[in-house]
Length: 461
Image: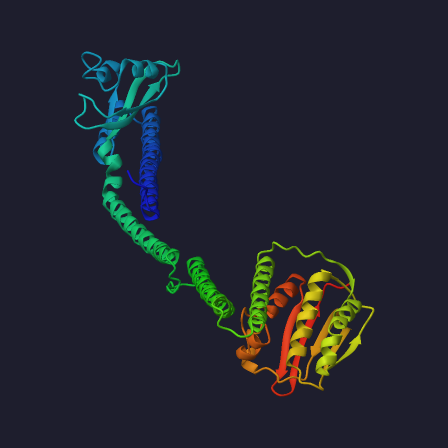
C-alpha cells in the first residue's frame, strides 16, 4: 500500500470518528432507553401491584370484589394482570417449560420478596414480556397469593420503534452535513497545499513566476500569502543572481580582452613600444584584483563569515586618520576637505571596517567633486544618536537613482565610473558594514549642486 495523502488520511480519520461516534451514541441511547424506560415501566407495574395488595386487605371488599377488580384492571389497563393463590399455577405443570415463573423466583416469592421478570424467549408467552410478581403475605408472612402483572416488550419498545425512522433520518442528515462540511474544509485546505506542491516543484526547476491565488483571510490564506512572498523573494534573488553573474562577466570581460589582446601583440612583436602595453596590462590586472577583492569582501559580509570586532572608538580621531590619507589626492585636485567633528563621540564598532566605510565615501566624494570645490565632513550628537554627514559639491545624482546606489555593480555614470577604476561594489560593501553596526545610511542629492551622505549610529557610549 502506497503512502496515504493528507486528504485520504483525513477521510479515514473522519470515517473512524463517525463510525465510533454513531455506534457509541446508538449503544448509549439503547442502553439509556432500556434502562430508564424499562425501569419506569417496572415501577408502574409495582405500583399497581401494591394497589391491588391494599385492595386485597380492604375490609369493605370481599374476595369476589377483589377478583372483579383484578379482572377489570386486566381488561382496562395496558398490563396483563393475573392473581394466583397457588404458586403451582404460576409454576405450570412441569415447573419449567410451561411456567410463568421459575423455581428460583418462586422461592423469592415464598420468602416475601417481589420478583422482576424479563422473558425474551419463553414457551409460556407468544411474545417477549416484562413483568413483576408481587407476593401477598399475611401477618405471619405466609404467602396468601401472588399478583402477576406483565406487558409485552413490543409495547415497551414501541415508542422507540416509532421514532426510529426519525432518528435514522436525523443521523443521515447529520452525516451528510458532516461529509459536506468536511469536503469543503478539505478542499479549502488541500487545494492551496496541492498548488504549493506543484509550484514548489516548478520553483525547484528554477521557475519562480508562479503564484497561488489567495481566496481567504484565515491561516490558509496567510500561508498562501507567505508562499507568494517567498516566491517573489526567490524570483527577485534569482534575478539579482543572474544580474550579478552578468555584471561580473561584463566587468571581467573588458580587462581580460585588453590583457589577452596586448599580450598577443607583444608576443607577436607587432608593437613599437611594449612598455606602454605592459603598463595597460598592469592597470587592467589591478582592476581585476580590486574586483575580486571586493567580491570576496562582500561575500564575507553578506554571509556573516567576517564577524565585527566591536570596541569603543574615538570616532572623530578615526575620521581624522582617514582624511589624512587623502591629503595628497586633495592637493592634486585642488579640493578642500572641511571638518566639523565632535571629539567627545565614542562609538562602539569595528575600527577597520569603519575606516573602510569613511574611506570609500570620501573617495567617492573626491572622485566626483570638480577642482576648486570642497568636501564637508560633520560629526555631531543628536537625540542620543550620532550623525556623520559627508557632503560634496559634485554633479549630483538623479533622484530616481538614489534608492539603487547600494545595489551591486550599480553606477550612475557607468562609462565614467569604469574609466576611473570603480568596481561598482563600494557602496554595497558600505551598506553591509553599516547594517552590522545597526547604522542607517541615507542619501540626499541635487543635480549640479552636490550629494550628501548621512550615517546615523545608535551604538554609542
